[in-house]
Image 1 (cartoon, rainbow, N blue to C red):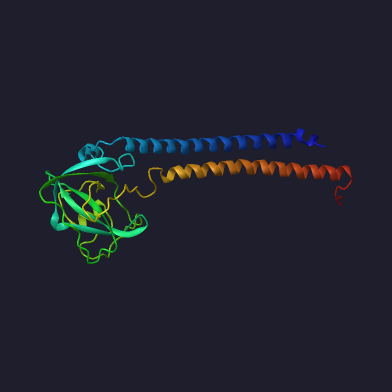
Image 2: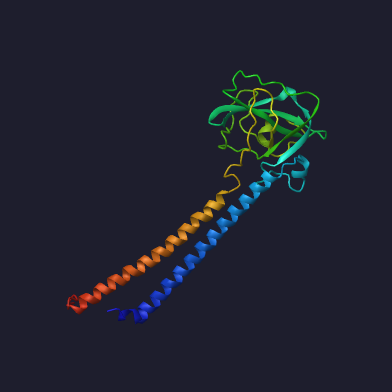
Length: 261
């Protein structure tokens, strides 16, 4: 009954199906390997951040060759020395911490070379309307905190605009430059470790798109599932055709072949 499998048509079809399954499995395995590599890199990055307890000057991480905050530098402890701009403190609303709505207290810190660093000195529950945050210390200070990435619209409650004076919708260089035209802003911002009474320290805020385990990693995982599904579909179709051919052979053996006029 299965002698038809040795016909040229079925031999070539079976070979093609086996090749298609092999290619799908190989591509799925390759995509799975890519996903595992990204997971490993993510875990190593988290471990390195946890292990590095010694804070570095911000200039050591944000250099001229690499001026932007990346997934490798997000959360790293840094120090910044300068003077707070006490006249231009900003409140950043719609920030959630431990399930509670509140706002950040952001104070620019001017360095000796005239550049500015956005320092979030803490989080306060409630709405910022009418709020008066505690004034920052005067004179030269050294702030220790964790480096954070620029915010974008739609991330962490960031809004595009339409806020009252003294409030900021997004913490990024473009938004800060619209409010305060300093000689230059460092990329990202710093979440201070030591906060004044009444404020809560802000935990590391991961960039939009993931906590270092980027969207591409999950795309790799999705592609893995797709290729394995394709492989299963090829096998399913081969067995379906086989079953149909077997049923046709059985019908022919019983003399049930349709008679063509």
